[in-house]
Image (cartoon, rainbow, N blue to C red):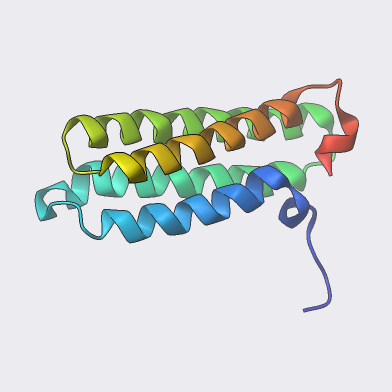
Length: 124
């Protein structure tokens, strides 16, 4: 592998990659009746974050990049909501919730910085 794509350098993408692995691992143990509910939804939302960061990084105009970063941000908030619901339903342990919640705060902040026109250095 000789080439590293722009999205692979993004802190938001790198952190999301780790979060998605953690989400997949933890949701393996969610109740089977949630397979097509919370389990599927939180996995898809996590993947959506990383996919939109990747797609946005490949856009040439700042407006297009920002559009995809906004979608990634909204998906990140969806993950946070699903973590809260999973904790409330007691299908996600407190320590896992706290770890993932803290990681999601890092991701949302990193995405927010990508959307900000004041920080061009953060865009690569």
